[in-house]
Amino acid sequence: MNVPLLDLRAQYLTIKDEVRAELDAVYESQHFILGPKVAALEQAIARTCGATYAVGVSSGTDALLIALMALGLSTGDEVITTPYTFFATAGSIVRAGARPVFIDIDPTSFNLEPSQVQDRITRRTKALLPVHLFGRCAEMEPLRTLAAQHHLAIIEDAAQAIGARTAEGGKAGGMGTLGCLSFYPTKNLGGFGDGGMVLTSDPRLAEILRSLRQQGSESLYEYSRVGGNFRLDEIQAAVLLVKLRHLEGWVEARRAHANRYNDAFRRLNLDCSDALTLPDTPKAEHHVFNQYVVRTRRRDELHRFLASRGIGTAVYYPKALHMQACLAFLGYREGDFPEAERAARETLALPVYPELTVQMQDRVIEDIDTFFKGR
Image (cartoon, rainbow, N blue to C red; front, side):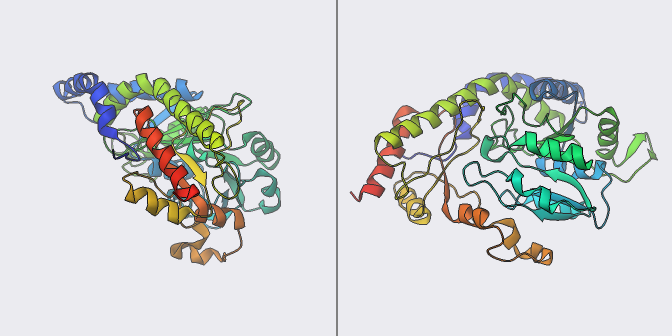
């Protein structure tokens, strides 16, 4: 029995009729760009994330880029963020004309370490860009306090975290000045292609975002700023409206799988320094487990062993961003962010998708037990 890291076909089979009905409605209307489905999705996502406005865009990467553009960043401006995340987080800062300033991560949450931020704020700092990595919210309250003290914007990279909440009840994407979502197919709420959304409760920023996604226009052939073609397709919105109805149940299935992994690995005495470090999941928080990520010093061995047994796993992310060749101009060196570098060496994502069966999960657990106990 093979166990894939993710099985989107299994999910589709549960919602096929609903999706086809929504798509047929779009085909009949022949309204493909910024139509009623996009507007309905924007309203629904804003409610889900606790924001006043939502602006559908073409991808999660474009959500980050357009959010940074909306703040009016210029050459020399700095944005504080994490080096342990998908490349788009830092890449979008550079594309917007600003400079990423990295802060090391907390080794248990994998998110930006707030206690290190104060010392990196300068007169050039314009924004903080925390990432809610793997579906767990970053520690937002100290970041919000710093942002208020220094008059900084906060852009939340919530690409992996729709539905996640902090211990204080804050919702991913709705706690900052701007929040960014991705609807890439592998996300908990994934479309049939690329898509994204920017959230805000600032009416002025919402107006700017809507202008920027349409080349910077505010009326036909009148341009008040330089934007781009960052629109969300009506077809993607139709699919996402269907999936949004199921999101809460899918997330609860992921959380149940994560709890089952934790219970099993502890029962087998694998939750130890010689084997696995399990995800830290405080009960007061609502972790949505876009990925279930363990860490082990034998990561690459375990990755290869499970692959040989037909079990899908993935490494998120094998190289911290300050070590990427195209960001060498920032001047960072190996050793500058030891926790991010250690996470890049040790982390491994296991299958946690909603349709994972008990039998499949048992197979993953048994094979990991076999690996560490040398059988």
